Amino acid sequence: MMANQDDGAGCKLLDSFAIFVQLVLATLAFSTLYIKRQRESPQRPLFIWSFDVSKQLLGGGVIHTLNLVASHFFGKSLDGEPESNPCVWYFLNILIDTTFGVLIIWAVLSSVKHLTRFYKLDGFQSGVYGDPPLRNQIKMWAKQLGVYILALVTMKVVVLFLFGICPWLEGFGEWVLSWTAGNYRLQVLFVMLVFPLVMNIVQFWIVDTIVKHKDILPIRLDGDEELAQDMLISDGEYTQDDAFFDEDDVEDATSITSFKIQRTSISDESLYELRTSGPKK
Image (cartoon, rainbow, N blue to C red; front, side):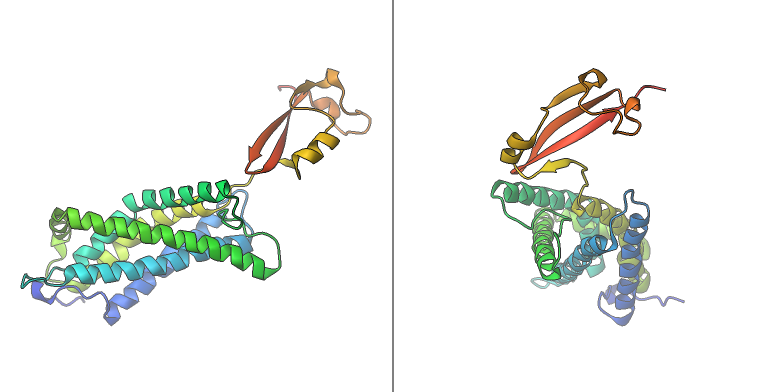
């Protein structure tokens, strides 16, 4: 049974009960990413998925530490004023991190992606870790982790700036948590487990979708020079009448009525997609 505390006792974010609650939260929140992987189609290889999730795991540790520091800082009394409740500030950090903060993370990651493509920097394509040896794959993972942490720190700086210019947010947080007044354990349970669990599940799913590699299935040639020498047909749409293949050598070729070759460019690579279509049933 939860013991009642007077309002002056406040909320403790680093006592044994709060630490236990934080460990439960981390376990439940990150387990949802495994559930997300089970529902993927196609499913990422376990190695790739582990690298993707580890970025969120380490990033989550960084942002959690920043939230604790920010909550303690804003909760301290200044110039003889009464101390603020750190639970209020932790609640506000979680609320803004998992809503407005996701947009900031996406904006930073997208900006870095375009900059690294423009300057042709290797290893920054999110979710792509290259081929063995493992040392090279870890280097690419470390680059992407650094970018992700940069996005998190940028987001937190913006959130703290928002706190500074919107002092009314504290009153809003106190109003939301007013039903837990006098019971600091209930307050800790809500702001460090129940509320962040719901919000972090949504955030983790969205961020995981952002950081994972989007598969494409192209026919890729190494370069335009090779294309000019070896390409026998050009971009366009073709039908059976064009007879670019021997039907005796291609099983079920008669079921293909047309195909289309379309060229796209990604960075300095050329990609060619072959699309076929059959008779309508």
